[in-house]
Length: 262
Ligand code: MF3
Ligand code: CO
Ligand code: CO
Image (cartoon, protein in one colour):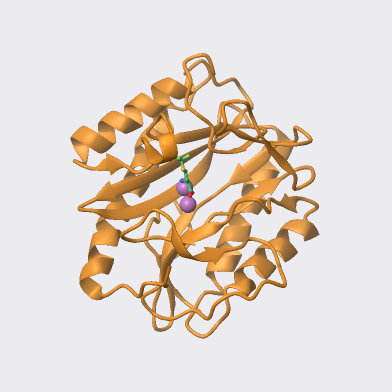
């Protein structure tokens, strides 16, 4: 697939989808409490997306995925399937990943939540993961190679004695949920591509407290750390601008500008 450069009208539509996705992550915060099931959280998100925002979940039915959100708890790296038997408990770390289709255009974002009081390790893992994402976003501008993103994330994460998951990466997004370019979150010899204004893609590092290896469960979706260590992820959809990038899925709570001049 080619890498699509989005025009102003297209960017406007991705921006609308992105705001909805960010709103979902803000809306669900107050429900994250010990005892609630991940299925209940999914139902609340699903109703909000459909009836409050008149939008569609990009996850529901995607390659057969059965729910509207991915909810990944503790050692689940990504693609956790919301389930009525999975109840949150004090100290859990939880990722909710929301992808939206609005007027045929896509957005994709995720963040970590603490259930009750976090453990020292859980809190540190989430903090380092979000900082790694922000450091990478602060490098994005026309003319740089995508490989800088992975290098920046891996450097920072390994300095902090955590590891970067290799098996899943960020992706171009727009008229498709996943399109080129691939955004690796670690350094690889693979040649990346040079960024240009109008490119839109996600950066979504998955960071493990133990080693980087993962395995897929029998449900064919749930990805866990192989060593059962904790895993965290933050994801934003970003637009490459003339001078840097714009975080399209920024939430109010975040202490970073949406427009990064890099
Ligand atoms: N939202 C995920 C991503 O960041 C993809 C989830 S696909 C699903 O790319 F089918 F599991 F929903
Ligand atoms: Co994504
Ligand atoms: Co996502």
